[in-house]
Image (cartoon, rainbow, N blue to C red; front, side, top):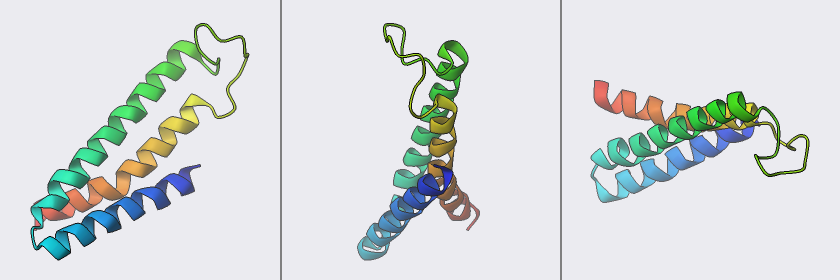
Length: 95
């Protein structure tokens, strides 16, 4: 799951880099990748907090005992989506 998330994050970064290159406005990298990175970190924290509250149950009203994909795995996937985007923003800020 982490590998798929990292690949998806890299693909989104490549798309944003392409948009920035063709428009000639590199601040798009800061705004789009930064927003995506922060959103994925927020989703990761929400999944992690949800896993602490519910564990691996389906939901409050679900009759399933466990989920197919655990909430902590979701949190790891969201963090791996955020890493390439946040690194690109960091490089943009430093330069």
